Image 1 (cartoon, rainbow, N blue to C red):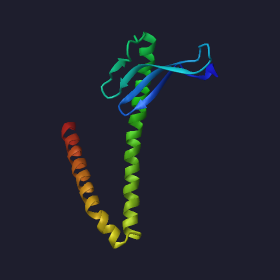
Image 2: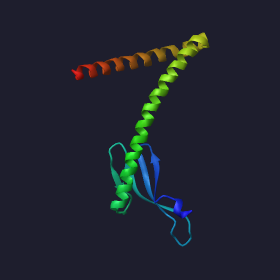
Image 3: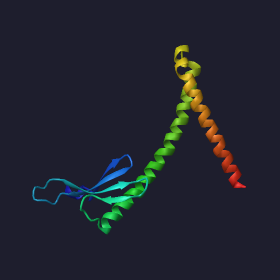
Length: 134
């Protein structure tokens, strides 16, 4: 089992991760995880935990994980937007075919404001892109 475990474990947090070194080579043959760092994905900061001094190998593993994690998060962002389009289409179908007057009263103002805000922002961003293209 020890050969199958990675050398590092990353406990994901909202802005990054806590980084642990995985150790199975101890006298009790138990899995031990010693925290060695905290990573902030947003600003790229890598802070050693406590008195631990990060090695070049530690930093290389952490930086590799950060690159992979940023790709995962970028993919999730665009996937969430595609899902939002699907939800908008499903919402339109619900409004057209199933919604009761009471249900529509409960959601109409919020939906109209959110859609107005989104439309205004999309139009402004598209205009900016067209202007900057020239």
